[in-house]
Image (cartoon, rainbow, N blue to C red; front, side):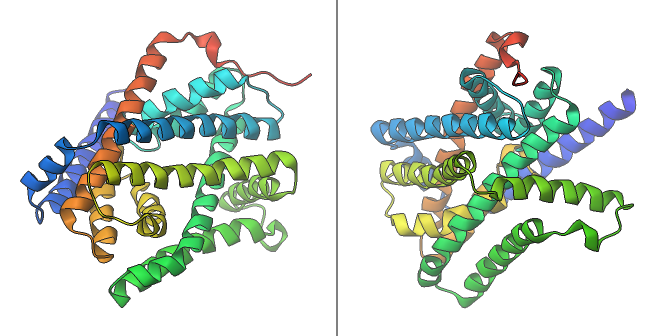
Length: 318
């Protein structure tokens, strides 16, 4: 037990160091006073609008959980799915890891009667759906990004990120297990991922709704950042946010820092700066976005302390 506690503390310490280092990298070349002034001048109406759009993401996330559980022959009331979504925000944005929400959902689903294997497959299917729809948005926005980025090197970098992400999606969509030895554990796991992903690609009304909900989430995030940018008095065009923010958020998903802080700030400063925006504006926007997520996450934490175990039930259709 002590060994695991030591390992957990070591991982937390490393994440704190990485977070501090990345935040230092983001702040070292900006006027901190200017950033503070921008944040203190955030328009309350714009902030409230961004908060309302974030609430819609929570609702959309609940729709994804409910729909994907049906693919695994499990049924969950929408209100229960909403609890999973909101509490998941607490663990993703207030806990040390950005994947904390996924771990919470998987553990809670297993405690509510779903097998561990099924719970993990449900959560991974949600991430695959979100990831693939994000890649689709990046693909749509890439021609716009080409016109916004001022340096050819940045275009190549963005194209490389997009190509790698698109390659991963195609690998899942086109994987044929008969071409690989079944005795390899890694191949069997990848086959399961591919099977679940291909199930999401099968034409049906349910799949269509799931894909629309996932795409809507990314559009809502762009809308949130547009509201915050307007509320901060920043002159960042909506087209720039649409073209570059999805890539920034994709990179920020890498779970190497505390709640994604630091990775997001450095990415925002770099990508928005590559499009001609000053570092103070990009950093202020990223911090406002992160604080907004913390507020919703804290609401999820309050929900977690108030609800009982029976609120997380999952039923098997009869």
